[in-house]
Image 1 (tube, helix red, strand yellow):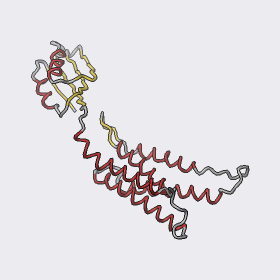
Image 2 (cartoon, one colour):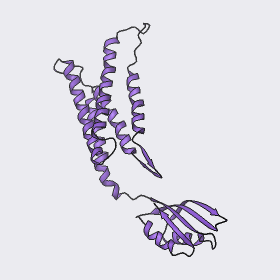
Image 3 (tube, helix red, strand yellow):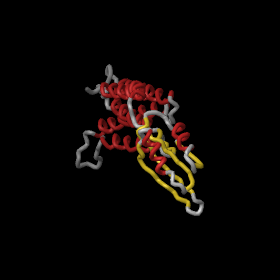
Image 4 (tube, one colour):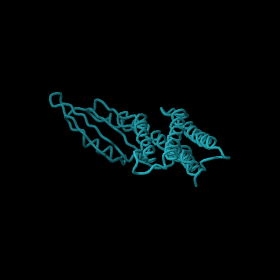
Length: 233
């Protein structure tokens, strides 16, 4: 299950192979992210994976150097601390690639990739070559193969719709009729009345749409008397 401490009698050669495998795995996963223009691409994933491997090798070296010390001595060893700090560090790095634009959140997959390659690097660093290879395969499978299957998955779309109109007559019942006729569901609604200006702004989150319908829906709403502005995204 574990890679031997030495390879052909050489400890340095075993370390070299581990680092190269981690570098290759991180590079392959990072290349996929780079092709899609993500902020954390080839170099970032490669460095995270290789760096995690190096840290695990250092943790292993701690144990080999100080493992014979007595528990009652001055030096107390806990190799697991290095692994724990790797996970903490990757959490900060992953947060840096997550971008929120209004209601849209981007970068979650890339952040998960960084977390994954850190685990892969740790596996190679501990000599768990088979586990590291399986982790690499799973990551590439999810990024390449599953991405091609996503368009075939039926899922709800969310349309954020804003309608500005005169307060009288009340257009809300007509809006509900349009949504009902198109088999749409109002997920949330917010209304902002301007009494002095005799105007109202209705903001909706619409679900159950199976295809982009923002333009068609806007044309239907624009034909209602009293509507001044329609905005969707």
